[in-house]
Image (tube, rainbow, N blue to C red; front, side):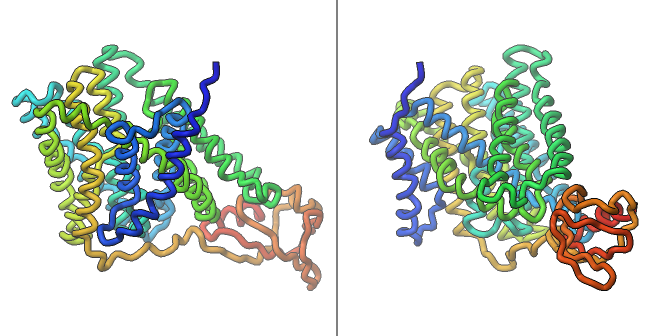
Length: 476
């Protein structure tokens, strides 16, 4: 039997998703992040207070899809183009190296603190809690930095890369530990490898397919074929993640990385289309539902769990503060401390990890509720501290990547296989177009049926970083 849709709750969600940013704009003095406002609104209309929204299978689906979509957009925000460019390779390598160093320091500090808590009988498993305290929240950081126009800066990219490393190393490790506790060391512990192999094969297949079909061509105008491809890829990897018992955010993030590796000049246009659906509908539903599902009454019934909340908040901050000081070498002490605040803001993984810990009897039900409230407090408190402390001097957006520059070339083709063939039958390298054919001193504007003859000179335009591809193609 098909479950009916709870239109009343869906209507309330949609109305508050629309009203929340309007309300926040009225209180600009406090600079409340939109995602924080959405979580807070969810608390008001959810289980803790008014209880206006009742989750059903459809709302749950939209909320989970919103989380998956958010992680997809997080993967899409990584500027991999700069790693391919000579002058930027060193900076990109140092940024990644710095992020890994920060992660290792976070892990060591978290392990030391977890050992102390274990000896005080506050926690029951050192390794699990070490990873939980080290986790980060790119799902919160991406929209937050994007809202403040910091994401597309050296500073913003450094924060994003570090948060992604924390998120996904901890996610994989937590899944591994959880599986080991439940089943012992079996093949199930390593099923997540299937997801990475599938993502790699999909990347290779899509890249090869793009040589034969340009999805930006006029044949698909008005059909938003890129958005369709994005959703297809997200759902393929999310479905595989679900089947092998891995969190769906890992699959959706890999889908975003695949897209950002493949897309060229149309990347910004497609990101704009994807942002409309994500930040306009799906993502607000996810953040509001985080607040809706929080039941504060369960926490207030246990004073000892309430006392743990400030301890957890301090631990989360300290774990991010010490490694963030490394960033002062590149960005100054103000931005390093500011980064530690926004990196301390928690969300999805702390919630997921706390649920896993509760199911494994590592923490009690009251401690689970305390972790959830800690998450909400952190994603309200720390972004506000970031805004209060950060000085935006010397933060400028990165210049457009060279990979998007156009190169115009005049070439006499030597490849005899191209002669006497209509242009429509020639599979030129992706993103190259023949604009003019010069024949016997005359300039010809070609159509799909125009043939290339021996001795023709071609005026061709395409992406500058792919120039060698077209030269090899025409002269092979």
